[in-house]
Figure 1 (cartoon, rainbow, N blue to C red):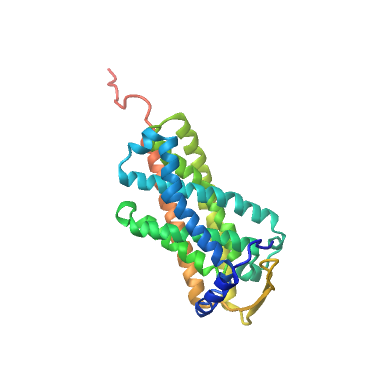
Figure 2: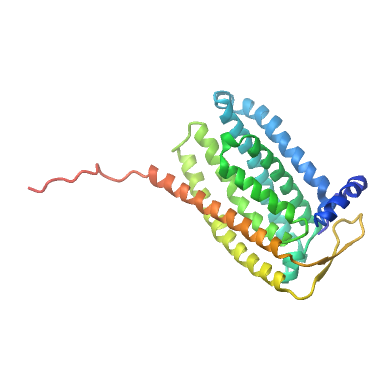
Length: 302
């Protein structure tokens, strides 16, 4: 599948020297989409989220403290991104026939224009997320900032290209994120403990466990195996990329530097560790709200 949006020649030409120096070979092909994603999510967070929230939920939104309104706007942005990615990634996985019979070389170096488009928009989101978390670190905390840093690093290094196949596959962990945001919104709307939050909570825990823990662990395990194979390869790989119908194919030679493999392994380990930590917090919250039957007092037997 090809990317229908070709890069502006002036932008590609301007970025190629820097990207060649940094070995981000496919970034000039999608930089316009990264920038579009960044501007779009910045607009959602700064303009659309406050505007729509104040009109759809006036009593709730306007009654929140300023720092909670900031978190609300970021949850709206996260909801928009995760919902879009859930549909876009699923479509690419099902419709892109080039992915069907991928070898380890295809999984590590393989790249399609459509996958690059989704990857670029995701990178634009993480660019916004990193800036938002860094500028509001005292409000959001270190874990959110760490997640933003890791997400941005993975998305940018993917433009070497390195592991774009896994970037699309692993992105399915976002299927649980809309329910995370809905759970947070319901709590702020005074619906904590309601039937709708209970149903959403059940769906959230099922999707979180299946997508982030089970699927994420499986993808991490297979990715580590292919990374190790790439690092140990004696000969370089050669790939011809058809990325847009308006541009000629791009031919690249690939080798896997050890530091890139280690960087990806470390970042994926951090993401999986955060997922396990967040799931344990969910379980603890559920257990706290489950009341034991009876009054808990033992009766004396006479």
